[in-house]
Structure formats: structure tokens, C-alpha cells
Image (cartoon, rainbow, N blue to C red; front, side, top):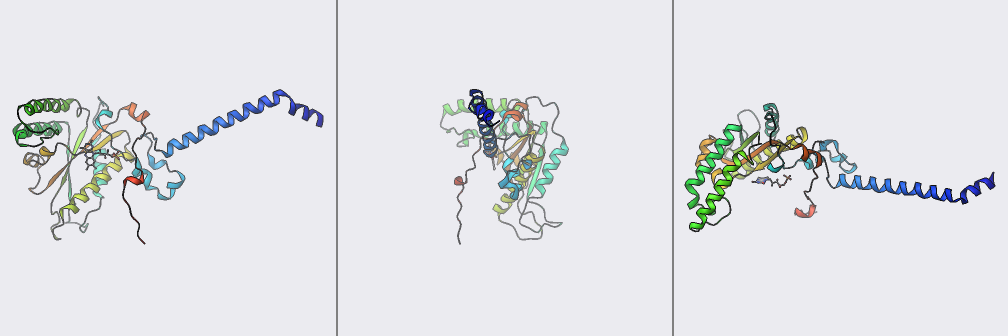
Length: 288
Ligand SMILES: Cc1cc2nc3c(=O)[nH]c(=O)nc-3n(C[C@H](O)[C@H](O)[C@H](O)COP(=O)(O)O)c2cc1C
């Protein structure tokens, strides 16, 4: 028996089987490490809610994966012909999330939130874009720069304006065509009837928190959607025309638009998250 075993151990077929087995083990180990590494680096499928993707470290900080999974998705990734618009119930749930953003002021009946949202459907989005073009048509000569970063310095700039105008008009059906709605983000000044006037920065910060909540809700619950916060064209956004269009108070501020569209299926399938949020990009200081 002993002799048989030692003969077997010394046989070439034994060594060959051992080599094959250890190669397979090595290959599987490398594969597992790579898959785990990819997950840690944030290579995620967006249709998978990251709330379900805790790794060990984050289990104890379970909201962090949801926060990390929030991401801006831009028009080149929108489904060109989505069929139906996004269900208003979905938009309503985004607005519900916004409502729970913090604001300085006593949050009881009678104290309004500083954020005001105007949901622009297809027709209103087009109106808003025509308003933008009309505003620049009237004002581009006196705006420096007039919105595309070009200097306003003579005849040449008129040609450049015409180019910009053409491409911006084309965007109505091109870039923005697939968008289901744009939610205008408005900061209302001095919203509380009972407390003293809050500083403007606090109201702007509260609006940003509300928008962030909206984006978190979208990414966590409706990952097939593709959204981002657009500042829009500065001068038109800050114009009186926009104030009138959005029915804003004199001191209210339009802070851009939350763009809501449906993501391309190919984007949902293949995307990898290339964003870098290395702690070194944010200054922090710890004091005893
Ligand atoms: C206040 C604000 C305004 C923004 N305006 C624009 C904009 O006008 N155009 C744009 O492409 N992205 C805009 N963004 C989106 C940023 O580009 C985006 O947040 C950034 O690339 C980081 O990506 P993430 O949101 O996926 O983490 C804005 C974001 C914020 C917070």
C-alpha cells in the first residue's frame, strides 16, 4: 500500500494534475481579487442601487453608499426616444425628498421652505429655451462675455454669436429633445413670515440641500433615470424675463434647472464610474 502511494506520488501524471489544479486555483484567486477591487473602485452598474452594495467597511455607515451612488448623468447618455415621459408620480417623489432638506427657520406650519420648484414639461421647456434665445438676441452686444465665453469685441463676435445662437437653437430638439422635464430651481428670499430675514447664503444653501435630496432620491429609487443640475445660461437665467416666466419675486434667484431624462440602456449596462473623490481634493483639518 505504502509502496503504491509513493509510486503514485512520484508519477508524472500526479505532478501534472497538481500543476493544473494549482493553476486553476491561482486563476480563480486573481479573478476574485479583481472583481472585489473593481467594486471598491466604484465600478458599478447604475441600475443596481448602491444602497444594496455595502462592503464591510461601509456597513456601519450605511447611508454612504447611497450618497456615493448619486451621480450626474449628462445629455449624451439620454435615451433619444424614450417613448413615454417620466411618470409625474416619480417627479412628485423627488419633490417630496427635496421637502425634507434642512433649512434655517422653524419648520412648522407658516414657515415656508426657501426652495421653490417649477416643473417644466416639454412645451414649457421649449418656451424657456426660446426665452433664453430672445434674451441673448436683445442683449448679446452688451454682455461680456455673452454666455459662450467669447469676447464681445466687434464684427467677429457677431459671427460667433450667430454660430452660438444656431447651435443653441439646435439644442432645443437635439441635446434637450430627449429630456422629460426640467425642474426650475428657485430660491425664495425671506420666506418666513414670522422670523427675521435670513441671510441669502442660508437660503441658497437650503435650496442646494433640497436639490441634493432630490438627486439622492432619484439615484436610489429610479436608477433608470438620468439627471443633473444645470446652471443654465447665466445671463438669461438671471434676467427679468426669466423672473417673469417663472413667476418669481423681485429678490428671488433662479439657481438653474434639474434635468430629468431616461438613461440609454447601453449606458445602464456598461457604465463605469470614473469620478474621483480622493480625500485629498477636500481640505479638512482636525484640531484637538
Ligand atoms: C450648483 C451646481 C451647478 C451645476 N451646473 C452644471 C452645469 O451648468 N453644467 C454641467 O455640465 N454640470 C453642472 N453641474 C453638475 C456637475 O458637473 C457635477 O455635479 C460634477 O461633474 C460632479 O459629478 P457628480 O454630480 O456625478 O458627482 C452642476 C452641479 C452643481 C452642484
